[in-house]
Image (tube, rainbow, N blue to C red):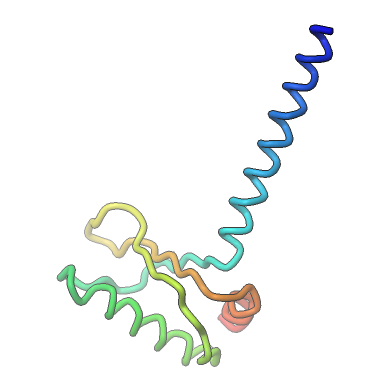
Length: 101
């Protein structure tokens, strides 16, 4: 009886771990990370400048119709530009950007 309970607990924990991993992967499915995107010095126009730079980039790689959900700079501000995480609306938009880059 005790072995059965331990086995059940082990299986439950592995299932939870698998579900958690799947959820994390689903959340990241539409994200791309852009390195060396110029970063604004001031905090207030930073998001707008990031959005403008990304839109310019999408036009240059001929993927103009990109719906951006969010733009986040990763890490602490230093001398060099921080990586930029861009969350797109669909996986097909992500594929189009990566294929045309």
